[in-house]
Length: 567
Image (cartoon, one colour):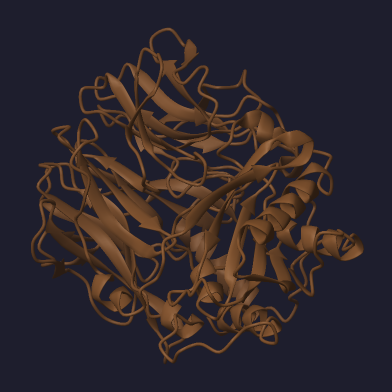
């Protein structure tokens, strides 16, 4: 937490000499950290209530503490179900709606749907996360990081104790993929377990020297029970050298245990997010076709369990499928897609066809469909509005907020909505991005401009709320913020994504420079003598590139900040 505050503060202070004084009530880093973090909506089986999580920063403890709440889906009072100084996350309704499973203290617990009668389900030494109920309510699947050569928890516990007592802390590895970001992955493996929903000894359904789900590529939960509760679909990468592979396949295994069977071995790109249709005829999942390419287009696929045939549901759809949820009748799939800095909701027939956009002007995530099919529930946010839970009817109409957790707090800042802009980039290609102005913007004044360059590079600036590189923090410290989506950004078709490959400092550089020049030219309130830029990861790379090519005759950058940039 302190490192986050320091990092953002450094970026803001780096431009301090460019900025003008602001009124006392500014949206600062400190105010950003006071925003309550709403997420993980879960609709009850009867479609009447929604469970959700809210995280609050505890400044004294230097951490965010998250708790579980429940409220009527049609609005009304919210009830807090968990409390204390330990977070409670991942609320999941039992199939009959009477219980809620969740994670706290590194274990799976179950409570009544009103928060009473809390009971611990797992007591595994290696911790448990991400609970999933079986449809018959008898089992809960979860993940745990274990030693691959251990067959029981006593073995894992003993090895952990030996490692803690050992004075030798050096890491010796024979695997190339021994670390991911800031986490060592050279000893333990992630496995999927099941345990009785009433508690007991957990069983490892994916034993072996591999990760399931593959930790470098998987989502929050990448396993699912079949409708008859007899089988579990999960992810695994079968390739020997995982560091150069994106071959995450879907396997199935009986819940009684046994050898997993690979359903998608013919495709060498990613697969993830398996879901069984209610009738059990199909497994729906996301897939990428190109081996070794993490930024390929995510497609929706259907695997026929009777014939073994696969078919693409979203054939011809040239955007990334982000999240998906099945209609209760199993005839349709709802999904969100990255589209020009937004994430609208689409609907497509299971048999395929042209996806229909049914909810626009949102940045939807955490998509859920109620059991009766009458409600779509999702998290929505924008650059001017922190995340809240929203709902729409089954056809996409009637979009409305269910929660208003941050409304009163945010009202005091008067944040301005992001404005969308376009300009001609390299080779005349139309490029898109966003401008954010201070809350007290005055067109008669002169403002410094800061250009924020996103990482990836196959990512995008989106009109959604974020806690890293929040444009409002920059804007309300006295800047006009320009957030371009140059070549390589997602949401503009796969060819646009592909054009960054092997050309990191080429067309994307021109896209950014042309956009900056265009924003300066069109807006007289920008002081062309006070232009700065900042970026992280690939954004840091581009900052480094700009530093060596800061000779555009139309303007010059006066300040450049590279965060985790490579050379």
